[in-house]
Image 1 (cartoon, rainbow, N blue to C red):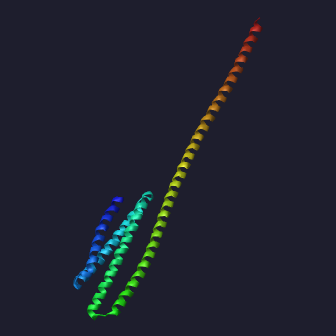
Image 2 (image 1 turned 90 degrees about the vertical axis):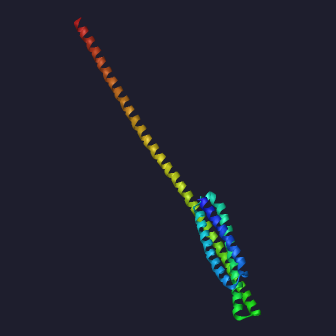
Image 3 (image 1 turned 135 degrees about the vertical axis):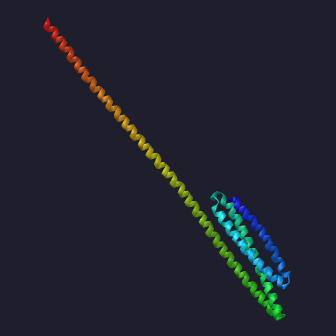
Amino acid sequence: MSSDFEGYEQDFAVLSAEITNKIARVPRLPPDEKKQMVANVEKQLEEAKELLEQMDLEVREIPPQSRGMYSNRMRSYKQEMGKLETDFKRSRIAYSDEVRNELLGDGGNSSENQRAHLLDNTERLERSSRRLEAGYQIAVETEQIGQEMLENLSHDREKIQRARERLRETDANLGKSSRVLTGMLRRIIQNRILMVILGIILVITILMAITFSVRRH
């Protein structure tokens, strides 16, 4: 499981490096190449998001005792993803302003004001995104805690079931022992009764022999 996660890590590292390089190149490219580069970066950002989703699924499958380290690495990757998106937004804003200036001519202060307004909106979106990310992280951690509790309950249930089985086996053994003791007591009583009967018969036989002997004399 961890080998799959590490494979996704390597893919994400290569992809994030390519995205960073392309974002840095966008302002220096001619208009036609910029448009193509922006579309390419958008596609790679989607691929990076899909990789993070796969990595997140892999982390959820890792045993709880080993999950903490991978969860910390996931947080750093998500922060890196957020930085890439922020840099790309700023690059797109600069690209949009440049295209607008080419179409309308030098807009002077109005273009600068629009750019400042867009940057302000971008920062607000980033803050909202961070809050959503924090809420998502809390939800993931809560889910992990719930899974750990369910696993603990499952282990406790297995222990209780094993204890019940041992009790059943003990009851069965006690029942067998009780039947054996009852049989032994019954045989002892039968033997004693048989000895008493034999003793009585022996006494009667002796008395009869003495009686016949006396009568003969």
